[in-house]
Image: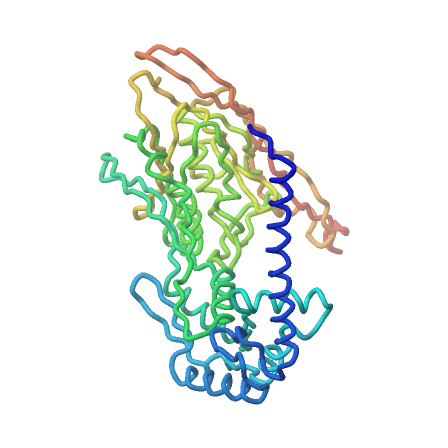
Length: 458
């Protein structure tokens, strides 16, 4: 690179100095010209309303007139995919403070530090200075209107689904959800109104991805396990509770390695979501309580999970054995206390479907079928019957020797349950699942001790 001579450097410096001098003179002269006027500086606009060269009173009148003419039209229009929603000024108490805006326009380049005044004048000269309109409106009314519009636009996502037609698997693709981004809409609205109006605003939306997508169910091609229990539909409250809980788990997809929680998916068994009072075991006694019958759903699910060869993470037996599953094959649940949980220990995703027909509850587990799957059965062993204790209570209110059964008592049981796998009819594995103990209920007999005068004489 060739070096500049001293003379060439001097010429460059002189040239730059001349440019700076003339620029400074121009800026100073312009600023002096600005300072001697009692009008709004030329180049100042309020929103898109040019008020340069006007007095404060003239600027105020012009702003007021322009705003009024525009308010007679539709100041705001929101639109989405061909639908328009006009918003009129009286709907949100829309207003402009023309007096304040005119004063702000006049103060451009006149208020603040010397540097700030110089800066504002420079901007005004070289591109114009805009005072934002900043209209006022009732934000609560605006949000209410936007909420009504959002209700028409918002769409819940729909998961990809698996259905059964007999034993045939039918797959339905997912669809994305749509939700209006209210905060962003209001932010864009304010920004555009600052520049002027009427405005047309494209309503911003966010897409919501479904939790189950087509790729999650691609490999599901058949039923790998199913289990059915019966209930009495005459007990309408209990039947409704079973229906609600069964619906809650139906359509659940569990990816390989994930853990399923019955309580998390079904939720609290409360009246607000439709659960009714029906008989349940509490501390060994059959009493009415909200959600009675839900344990039949968890127990049915427990059995089909066993048959599908998945890992049990949490399971608790009832205090007394229920009648809808074989002894030792139940799984009780209770809000915030007892849960039924299992892990999808298979190499493929599973899909749960429940079905109620008349008095039958059937739960299916669907996944990728394999010819290598063993035949699985649930078997019990080491069943032991425990007789109840007999408790004798002396009762002075009963005649001597008379007996009254206060509590009938019930037998207790101990039983071990196994998951047995067979291949080509030959047992290849026997897994101890649980050894359950159902304690007996004491038989209580009251025996009279009251002796009458006649008996005493004899």
